[in-house]
Length: 265
Image (cartoon, rainbow, N blue to C red; front, top):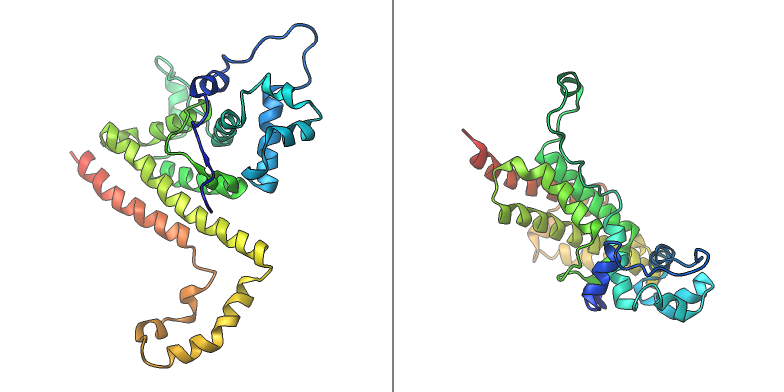
């Protein structure tokens, strides 16, 4: 999937105002039917259905039954709208933990559920992020190397940090864990999304695609030129093996070695 958008490519200050709720301009008279929330929601729904390229201010005005200029009263342009869309979906299911009370009641603390631990926290974050890409494949077409940090993104990072802060890692290392996991997940998600796209574009199923290669591959594999490939079991490329979970657990196993080193007495 070719990168076609970049987060933070518009007026960053204006995006931040809108993301953090300081940029809505007050209007006189009755409450308007068109709101920033409606615009962002419609843009996400359109991108989910047809891809990010389908999202334009003109198309959204048609979808919302409003004049194009009405949209510009709420959001400066498409670039800022993409920032708002990104943060909205990144905030799905991500909630910052409540501030700690001064001292919990003893009875309450005895019945409180224990913290899930850093490994469970990272596992959940990885699976949630993969589900996010599956629900919103257009996320993969956005260059997010310069993220505009709104409440969705910051809340997600806060929640993640709350679960891994007791690993004994330094602050840069904690951020590196987040980057490492996100990089792994986005790579797997890209492969999954591309697999769906190629089936839609070609109209050819995976079974049909591989069957077309079978006659030539059968000849090649019996030639003796590729003994290791030829010796692989039929299950090696089967659909039943969960490559995502296997890779995630090995990533966590490696991280666990470092955590144990940092936290041992």
